[in-house]
Image (cartoon, rainbow, N blue to C red; front, side, top):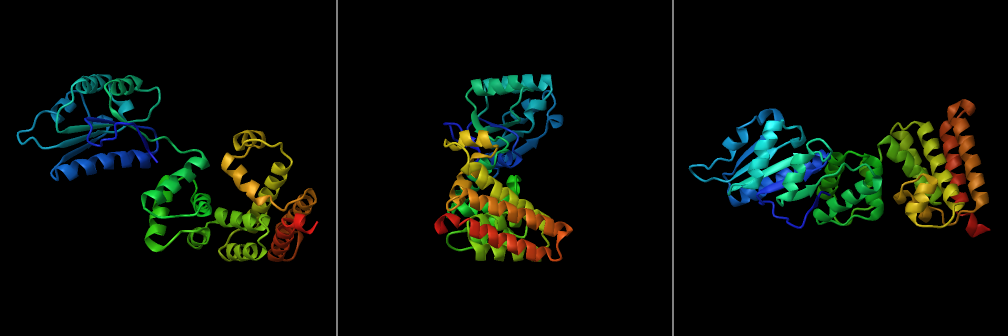
Length: 329
């Protein structure tokens, strides 16, 4: 979610939205516009790009109105403004007009930093809209979307949704909206799976997750669903291999915090936490058995066998049994 500073009044004279995440930037603008229109339904909104804001244009937009109506002036990509227009904006920031809210959208880099610094010095309300490149950030975003909607979703459901949708925040937000509208009660992993497991990458990893957790029936069900929706068998063997290898890597690693292990093993911290939960019941012998099963399945789906589906089912059953090997030792 976008982070805001302590001065959290959407009707502050100046709002500075900083970052490159388009969804969050658009939300920052919508929040200001909604607050302004709640105060004055006739609020005049001007949404401008740098090429539309020439020297002198801002002065015209913020000049006193005969009817003193409220205005919201949005300037997108403020880092791309011309030097003369930047001078106009800086002059305005020194003495902003009443009944006018200026919203500056800035990418936050070195370009146009002088304008950014000036806005901060005059106490502009700031909304951070950073690009969410880390899976953990996207997971936090999804959790926040459910909280904002007043709905409960399990951690597994949130993670499954991120795995299924990927990095597009608009798609993640849209998926949360759809689930909230369609589903009553707590949203769990099974619900998300019914809606989104048809995506190839997500469904193959669902098979792998259920297998390494020792949940044979669920793994086989996920496998059959994946194959019926057209997921390539090679994607499933790849996901199984990644799942088993992650168990092996983490079980042989030295103890430590997720962040330290993440650097050592080349996994994101959220995956360290997930694999830690999955590795209960695994033994070194079990990992060896599972890796051999994956290798056999890989050969089977790449032409070494007559029935790729059977090869995958055999591998899933073997891996799920290996996941419970400690209990049988």
